[in-house]
Image (cartoon, rainbow, N blue to C red; front, side):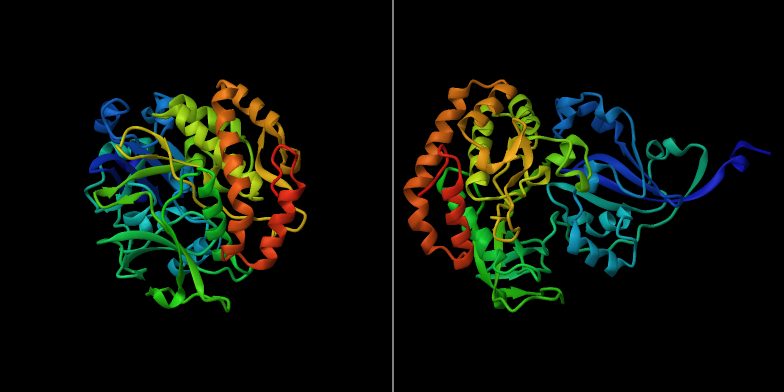
Length: 423
């Protein structure tokens, strides 16, 4: 009996992963359920000094790409976190008639329009390179074509979100190329006024020096090709311009669940704001500047009662393909109006989560643990506070946030510590 005859036969389908035209690896999916991410030897020789960076973790762990990443059923967190959560994932899985945790079909379906600049394209039988099959050398791979459809999209998060192209004031959800690219968030079927809440919170944060993309409230009548989904009796959606898409092409980005190697269901655990800040400070191309921006954003989350700034709501992006920068803010929401008696931020900061116990001392401890002199952070905290106190009380009246939500936010401002109280 020959060695080949002794090997077990197993079907395999595969996706080629590319980044700015550079082949970075192959994701092979075996019929037994194994998903194996192998990195292209040519890319390994380039990275991290000459090739485009796929992840900041290449700087933290220099030999990251030397071994395949092997998972069962799910993908490695580096790729898994490119896929949506919640209602959008359920909708996609139902459309594909696959299990909601069977992630290879999901990434195959959305691979041409993933967040960031990674493109996952189907490899035909005979095109799968031997180096991507070697981790399964005890089986004989039988290559089959990937069942993938074009023009789909993947955006992480629990709200129904759709990628769109804006042309002449209208947003085409089916079209994926050819103009300004925006994310559309439809109204929630569970909570009232979410688009107006998020728009208002982002505008308030912007006043304190938090960097945000372009945002708009959009009438539902301005959306073309919206999928047939249940919607409440509300008239507006929230639109935010994609910072990972520019006229010159895609901009690579990744959230901190990808960077730290955790799955989406772990987004509230195992990481604190010191760990995120330290990674930004040590490995970011403008570490101190981006850490100061993070401090402003942390303060805004406390002042605006946002309890959902978990690790997937912090990202790095690569405007020049190689230099990690803190991305603009996204997914800022005042969660207190929807979560009665809520009083905690999403992650620990100097061992504290209760926003009514936060003061400047907590920020000083945070900066000390990261290794940054407190005065470099304090000046940004003081400036952001001054802007909020000068502008927010009158500005809130002019924003579209529901009146009852405005009332909750004003009471929250009065309940904060003396260091952070507004009004």
